[in-house]
Amino acid sequence: MSHHGKHPPGDRVSSLARHPARLIQSAFEQGQTGMVLTDAAGLIVMANEAFCRIAGCECSEVAGWPVEHFFVSLRTPSTIGAEPGANVDEPSSWQQEVLCRRDDGESMPVLMTVDALLDAQQQPHHYLRTFVSLATPSGKQLGDRHWVHVDPMTGLPNWLLLRDRLNHALAQAERAENGLAVLFIDIDRFKAINDAVGHVEGDRLLGELAQRLQKALRSRDTLARLGGDQFIVLLEKDGTAEAAQVVTERLQEALEPPFLSGSRYLLLTASIGIALYPSDAQDEEALITAARSAMYTARKKGPGRLAFVDHRLTAKLKEKHRLESRLSEAIHLPERHFRLLFQPEIDVDTGCCTGLEAVLRWQHPMEWKLPPDAFGDTICRLGLGIRLDRWVIQSVIAHHLRWLESASSLAQLPVSIRLCESHLVHDTFDRRPLDHFLRHQQVDSLAWMVLQIPSQGLSSNLDGTSHMLKRLERLGVRLTIDGLGTHSFDLAWLSRLPFDRAKINAGLTSAPHQDERNLMEALCRLLQALHIDPVVIGIDDQAIATTVSRLSCKHVQGDHYCPAISAEELEQWLSERASARR
Image 1 (cartoon, rainbow, N blue to C red):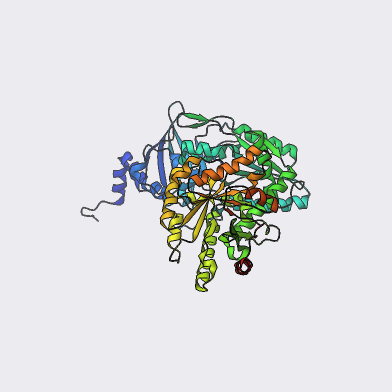
Image 2 (cartoon, one colour):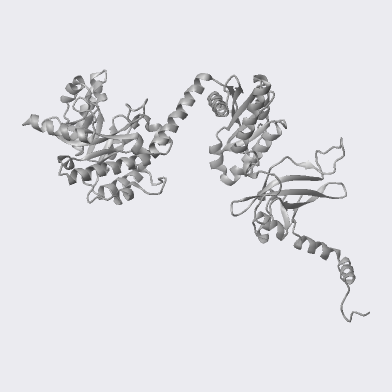
């Protein structure tokens, strides 16, 4: 039976067989397994379409790139086909589980097989890497792998997996009455290195560093990345202080060889804190906190040091974290946790109230007597100062509008609001500068509002700050410089900034030497020469009031005249004061 021009399948196969290079090229290009050919240095020579789909890149762009740019290792390489006892220092074939870095930010689990192409001297001249996705086209993971527990940058367990293993290890240690150790690792000065080499190169260095640390550990130990440049090591079964110290020293030795970054050699060291179960802590969170506190102790000794738990420091650190947690909760629900009060400002000549200052009190069983200013550094470090100040501004505006509606005399008084220095930068958490925030408040005029600007926040960027202050002035807001004389500040700038008042703490009048007390009077006269009205605050007793009365200062404020009180009490206080003067 003839086929009249049609070639049987065998003819096509034999045709391709006569051109093996074309057959190999066709298999490389059309295969559904990702394939990459690299030179001996790991630079990509060619890659097929399947690899580019897995790695989320264009085939025309990959040539010349290091193949490691497209994935991070999840497991230590395992050699293929090695005989027992064979020398596998330089295997010719191995496998690794890796995560491919996709352009869309997702990470795809992949099994990578590497085969070395050897020359006549059995030296590799190229490598063939094949990549098989461990996920379905819909993104579902194959098998029972839990990739959500993996840190995509380093391939190490993340906090979720560490917490699971730590809880399991604690339960086992309790049953077996064994100890365990937690090591908290912080890379010394890594932020400066990251800024110098760039974040992409910094990420690569962290990946290499993680590999070194992993190789220095035993298979039963867990190395996890908390985030940034911080890592945790969990040592199970042998959790004695001696064993933990040996492992810690081995980790530090692993970092001793310089790291190559471009043409530069970088030296990286780590501060490592050690916490032991059960002597230092008995639960997961307490162990991590104790190890972190020990790391701070190690850091104080110098780079590349280790330290065990100092229980006094641990207690102090726990108290610090407790305070931060409560402050954060309070600031996110300010109407529940804070109380807004007002303290009058007095004219010493007439005894009249010439203004108010909004004063905040934290309604906490332990800290309610202290103003949030007592925790100012903590609030700023948590990045919550702007949120709290905005709530105060809106609350003061609401009070002012109620006073207007009720025709209260309080509506005629200027109200000062103390601000944190974070307002002086444009990079707020929501990219909304202070003048933009004020412009969107439902109030016809802001001429009654006085914003107190901290003097310590002016010295860092006077040029940028002056633009912000002038924009606020154009809104009609009056400006006061706060804390003058307490922090260093170039007084020559005062003539260039739109301040009409300055708050000076009365504590300057209690200096032990007369010459120092005279500085207070000199400061008042200097401010008046610049058409800035000085206001002495913190006058809490008669002795200070008597000293301040000798100054050429007209306005005062303090508990000696009237403490901070609620708006309702303020109405009554103002009425009684007016009656007494009559």
